[in-house]
Image (cartoon, rainbow, N blue to C red; front, side, top):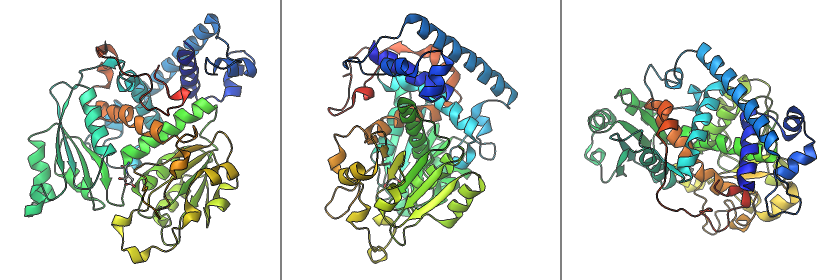
Length: 432
Ligand code: NCD
């Protein structure tokens, strides 16, 4: 019951976009009382929330939903038409989103949580087939897109690498895309060249999702990253507007940060601190785009300690994308750039959120995000990967136009999943 109570209250604050202070004032209770309702049941201070408060919060959320529905009906049509590319239902770049449309996608992702958390099943995509075309290395993006499609009742066909595809025989992107379109109902494509997935998308009318186009973009990763930040902030009682985000590592070739910084720029008054070794700084065109959105401050720091000293809300670490440049171009990705327990304890507070798109390079000398934070609940990387499922389910549901069918399609699961899927998961990571 306590987890359900915590989840319920956090979800309410996130949906209403209210901090703990404002939320407690809105429902007419003392901030201290709210804090005790949000504690884990095991803790001494924990209190049960009175039923009448729960009913009142539900009423506020229902009213808010009605207002949003009204606001949506005054916008034009379904989400997939509003984010379409040249009239096609495809996801190629985060530039397709506004703050309203991204938050609408996240409400659909919330709907998917009972399925992603293995409490419910749905078959709304029964009969549909996904083509997962990965011409670059991938574990989580390929599998989580596949699992998301399967959890909505669809099936998946995979092809991995150039070696085992007809591209090794000289087949063009146009031919590959058109051929696949005759076989499958949607495609996720990852390819080492910037712009290549857009080329796939132009050669077909079926939904195409960009699973990473070289150093270009990785929109689904940025969406799940933003969803994670909003979820973590709601647990911590923070708002994203005005937050301080540090991005660390290879900001030049890391496509996840290219997409994420543009998506975050849809919010107001953020401070970005960018910490990159010389030669791996964020490209200027992206900085200019973020700057145009107004109200944001962007600072570049030469070292991690300098970058984190101002008190950050989120640290987003990245791997050096060695596969994208010659080794001699890399100078100075030294231990000073490593996000580890010592630097976090020295420079950050108890509610910093530490993220990474993964994989982290755990080989000696790589100086990527350290494993010594594995037992630290500030490390959100596995909550982040778990969020890949509901967000990717929402992407498919929207692109294939079935999001309105999900709620009424839910059935209970027949098997019994563990309440925590990882042995080190924090209390607040539990399934409700
Ligand atoms: C990232 C990617 O492929 O861009 N991984 C992922 O999809 N989660 C980051 C990386 O490879 O470093």
